Image 1 (cartoon, rainbow, N blue to C red):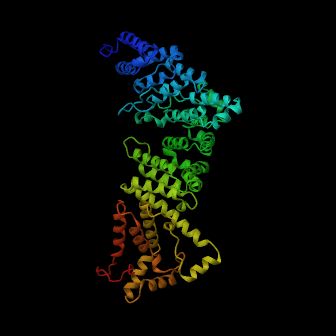
Image 2: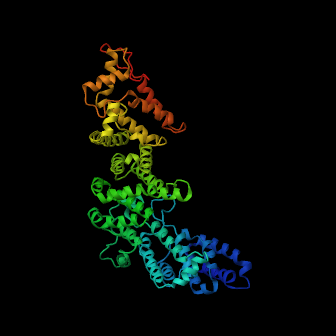
Length: 543
């Protein structure tokens, strides 16, 4: 009968629910027999009348000492994800978290309810499931709870903590700390966390908080010097630190650095994503900040810094979880940039990420950066302008790399050069064979480098004029006339040989494998045409 009533007849639904609650949850005589059935019935009624969750929360608040932790099972059966809590409900949850111990039933219930709320988008719509003022109301709660836990830790009995660890029990405070981070990461506090229509609206900044003046952020300001969680909330919710470029560069970057230093990498990645989307039209300004670039490099190399320790501890290499997250972030941003009304074009965003990752010295020797770049190229490979700008940036880095390598002094380099076993340096010398997309772009860069220096055309002309000579003799003649970097070297160092090597080592089922073979055979069968238009019979690809 209660489920058949419309939304206006909540009094009847509340009366029926109260009777079911008392019989199935409170009465000791009928609790064991009717407990499961009562929870199912209450869940069915609340599915029709979501506001009933507020009524049951109020009832549980008065009877929780009698009900105990069984109240958690009750609310697990309710449609909390479809519930829109009132201000009084938020205050009740705040009271449970701030005024009771982490091991208490009230604290457990509040955590369970907040975790089950839908902090994302409602279904397939472009609207938040919960109003933005609820997200803001919850913004400081994780910081306040953390402050209480830390104050209790400082006054806790050391012997009691020792006994807890000795018995192998889980410290509830550590569990709560992990939960606090999960809640903070779920909230949509930053402008770029919101759905696209809201992000682009003129009122997007109206409900952001003033970090210096808003009393709501007083706990965050108080804990900012000691709490990484407070740093994250400040960067997400403040109208200045995370939404104003100048303020972010001066005051926000140190907070982001603290997130990275404290190993809260998921939070740092989220802030990084928000910042890049918000300042997308001034992305070049971000790359001019050494601290910002250093943050990107720390995030990219986080797995590499831990892999040695993990490998020694377990005998296996690390899983690269942080690199996977960073690759997913880049891929998501590139996909988002291709949608209508995007503030950033795919070309500019591809250039930004390529310059950010290749700005690190010896970036081509870092496996994690290679993996992220490989994912970036894969996500935009079908977009010609993106592919061209990535190739252009890497060509610039390769040109600088060759010039730097050429200027290095030393007897060893001179000996290699005289022996003819050297050759121009290659980014591929340290690039893993499974990174096919990155290998393809690097090979295109090195092939273009040879063309721009006239190496390929000169060898073809020499072989056409002297058909009995081989490519090594043509190279020697070319080096005698020019000052090509790292000359002399044998023809085995030409890019066409690396095309063949990479095509052979590429996984057969990789979509880029066919491209590698196609590029190789295009160069293998290439013939210059003479002045009459006929192809000559000389070939640089003679092995």
